[in-house]
Length: 617
Image (cartoon, rainbow, N blue to C red; front, top):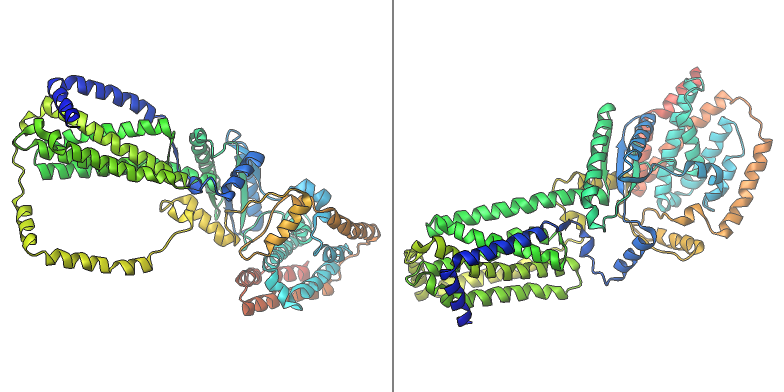
């Protein structure tokens, strides 16, 4: 090793131009490779790829191509304006064909019109059949009141067991009453909301609405896959285009609010923020190091001599990362700041040794062995992360380990050449710090002081371990202030569910249905969506068919007659009392969602307004 150090010293002093030229050429090559690195700022690669859930996830991607979506929340206090704005957003986003594959705003309308009754759950088809035995408004509301009382008021346990269904029922009846009022008061001209409310009462929600009935959620399936790193710039451009579009629509409609989230939105923010943070942290750490160099060495050339090989070493590490890995993840993106902190030590030891009497000639002989061993031990510690199950940690170990080796290599080859070429006056520079010597001398005779300080620090370890917490929610690891993360939190509160979801694969329609029923019983599961909704098991279809045929037979014999005003008013008042009763039961049972929805419905005044309209029409 001594011969190797003497060789480096000899060639650096005799041919510094050659050493620097080769180093610059190699740096340019590595810089070109580093420029091809892709930034993958996603927590998906935190999951061990050998884990069964990761294997299943990859199988889902292969078979179905589903990597999550891009979600848009449209909010407005007026129901018909909410639908109009949401439809405008849907139509406008569909025009961005380069990014948008499909946009879903609600249930497939034509399919539901043709097959909606056959899709109704077997537990609900009986009451729907009872509801559809009359074409008269007063009888319709009368029958709905009977169902409401039987389902939730007379059987209070159902309200707790079917909280989400109860909320959806209140939302549906709210839309129905609001639409009915508009329909009657406009002399049968404004029928949009009346039609939607009626469909919701019979077949379920038409749109995916929030629990307060003031927001509609749209789901966009992009053309690009997040797992394809080459698509990241296109994803960023597409998300930015949609956001600019949403801002224009929001400005055109007063009292509206439009937000976006979902994995594509979060990935876009992670990518842009990660690129910005990577550059910012590298610059800040470099400036701070340079400032400390000038202060510590009191030599203006010192930070330049230290900075050039350090930058070269970082570039070499990034170039090798492109060769061995091909990407940076959310942890290795900060490699610049990490290597500045680790690699600057090598330059400090070299420069300190250079300022002593022997100058550059004796530098590597003194500190070379320590530099190499120190760099290799640090590199080995990071390389050991390769044996973990997490790709994100494997890559961190490889990148930082390579960085330790490249920065010490650049320091050993480039720094002596720089000093030989420009910094010969560094030799013999007096950098003594008497204050540190006196402190060391003082502590050497009073060893009890550092011992007490060390033991005091160790005594805090049990307290720290006891209060140490682990964070299991990856979304909380995101950068602060991201609009997509804030929107994600808003949707969780407004819709009562997470934007994340569990995926499972079933081998048949029947298995899909039975699996969905089992999953619904698990605490924390809001709802289950799958092929079973649109293609129920044969047994359920046979059971439902009997009720549907009964509905059709009754429809042929139905006779319409004008509503009895007093009977209608009585049933609307009864409906109001039923909603108030549900609100009271929900309050006593601690069902906040049902309570808040029922309370909002009563406070909206839709029922009182309908009563006034019926009396005066």
